Length: 415
Image 1 (cartoon, rainbow, N blue to C red):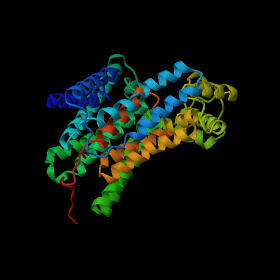
Image 2: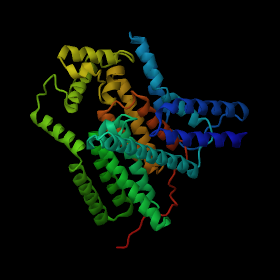
Image 3: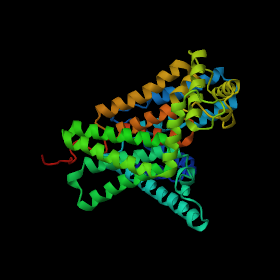
Image 4: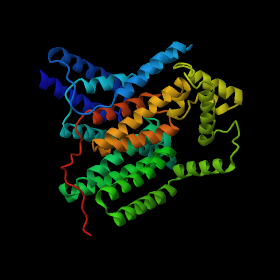
């Protein structure tokens, strides 16, 4: 029974990883099946705490603090819905910490399943864009933005694509000598394809994060392999090609032009509809809520209503009509729970990054780095797409053996 439930657990984790970028609607059912399998194993075999260091405690504490925030919430229905969205903060830490840890090879299979789901989703996105472009004689914008990322918010989809790029880069660089020529070509193709697909999402946050990721990967490579010239030239060449491609991608380049023009003008018009101005208004309003309620925040279920009141008072029409959240998870949590909640959120990212560094888990470090960058300008824990993606993979990686063992063959170039 132990081997059977462990195999089912692995297969369900692979399905979840595959479906995260591909079909979000099926995730609740898969998570329920994962919980049922966990319960069956616990009853028949017993619950086991893995020997691998675990750092999901801060996530559990943050979720419990969101629950405590219901005590000073007036909009209880909104609060309960928020707790439902964030339930993964509690579920995945429990699931992964009370059963035997995955081996390095098993973790890799889950990561391969994620890459497969990402590839399939990109093929579907391009296929539906091509259909609209040719069958309906639409313009080239069908291959960009919300028309391309029709199944997921483009910001969260871009976060997943960035994660896929980091994973493909690690599979290539850390195991260069183990891979044949065609495997190397395939991984290089994946990195290039994922990078172009990220441009297709037209996510400004995604593009900027990818540029940071290129630098981060280059610095990591230089530090580990001490190939300074190759590392610097690689980052410059890849970034240069990426920016050149970006410039000739009409929809995405247009959004960056608008952002630069909006920032240059400053003194945003309260009725502005440009996304940069909307974000600035949301940050300003959320920051004021933190200053007005620094200790306990406005409450788990009241933060959305409090932001809408701010928008109304300041005349931020677009923010109010679109019911925009704080557009920053740090500000969102701070406005809801005060400085204590914000501190716990920082501990979540800091604890995971510290574990990744101490346990030599570079992919976990890249994942936390990507999510932290997104959390500065997106409220990534306010929707299922962000919560399940982040918590599932961080708990999988932090509670299991490293997917890239220290004994793995590494990338070498002749001097």
